[in-house]
Length: 144
Image (cartoon, rainbow, N blue to C red; front, side):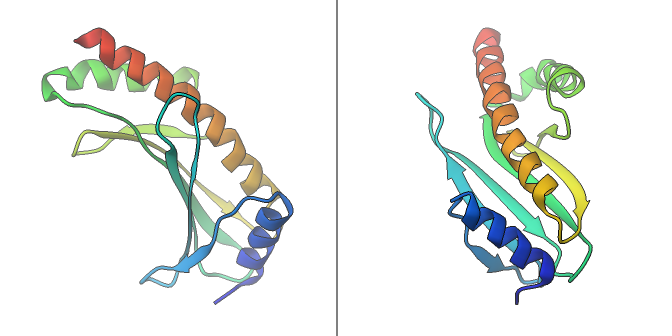
């Protein structure tokens, strides 16, 4: 079910030729999933979830599997690195270490039918994700 906000977001995606298709989640919210290529690395997955509300809604943008902690003996060092990157490099986004060792990045926000800021934060996030992934891969390699 399309709302004013999802229709506006889908129009921006179409105008910018970003091939994300909507799917309705079990809670009624709308998700858009995609990947983008990074030279020399595996494609990076991301997703946008919009509340299914007509005029003002909360959203979440996530970039998945930036890196993976393979040894929990390194957890403290990795958390310190994430804190450093979160303070210095991530802007609107936050790097998070999941319970399964996955390091991912997300941001939360609120938007209206003027979704240009949402789109720009998504695009900005791709650059942050690339840089964060590179820093994390290098950091994890230095721990071994």
